[in-house]
Length: 339
Ligand SMILES: [Zn+2]
Ligand SMILES: [Zn+2]
Image 1 (cartoon, protein in one colour):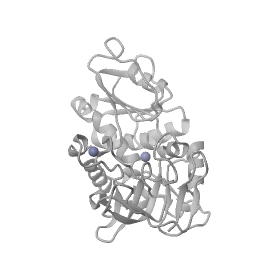
Image 2 (cartoon, rainbow, N blue to C red):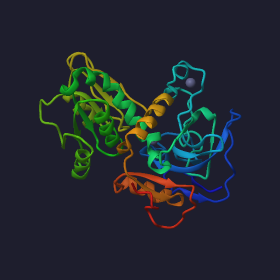
Image 3 (cartoon, rainbow, N blue to C red):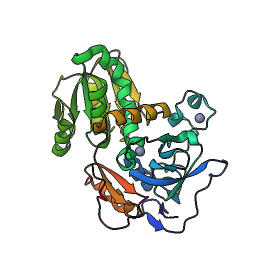
Image 4 (cartoon, rainbow, N blue to C red):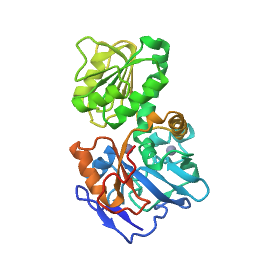
């Protein structure tokens, strides 16, 4: 089968045309092999390629996978596979299992014609959703959905008086604006340095988009998709009492915590990915509300490295999705799937 392989950290991905069909990793057995239709390119793929986290190479990246299962038809893969035995797994929170082995991070992922999946329970039927437009929901969409859910209860208490701040209006922030608009009556403000992204945020339903909120402006829920010192500290400065701060971005930033350092009764959460149950809910929501499927740019599988380069340079406007199934190896970037 074809695969784009990370052979060494910080080196370009390498096209391999005769790679063996994937099998269960060491210590595991069973599972199934799925034919991949599409695979989204996520910022965390860049971290894996750089060697910041994930398994040592060689490894096939890609964790936003759609494919076709002989029994279920078109499916999305839930990629953070837990051990199945620990407390987190028994509560359905497999993405925080200490022994989880995410596809494309710790085992081979979806930048390939086929991917190994440990169990059919990790396949979520697409039921009519476009496999290219939906692919980024597997991580980008699900991660934003869970982050928004941390603040939904507080915003619903406040009704139309609720105020939400979304920091970072790239892919995940754009999903979050859609979820906030759909699930709450809150007024949503987006914060981003890029004028382009601020314009996009407003077009998606943010009431306002700013480079920085004004001094003293407070929000009941702040979701930080950047996560560097400056943004987590801005989140702390601009959250209201009894507010919620959810940090999602892997920027490694920190903020002092304790009495006097944060507003009273504020909740802070480092939010990661989402549960299988939340993926089911999310796909249901996307079927009802097609505006949640953001525009994607489709590129052939063999251009995975160029997709990484575009993402790294900030050139990519929407989420990038690799076309694995059609065998399209031409240079055309859009592949007819732009939404
Ligand atoms: Zn576990
Ligand atoms: Zn991801």
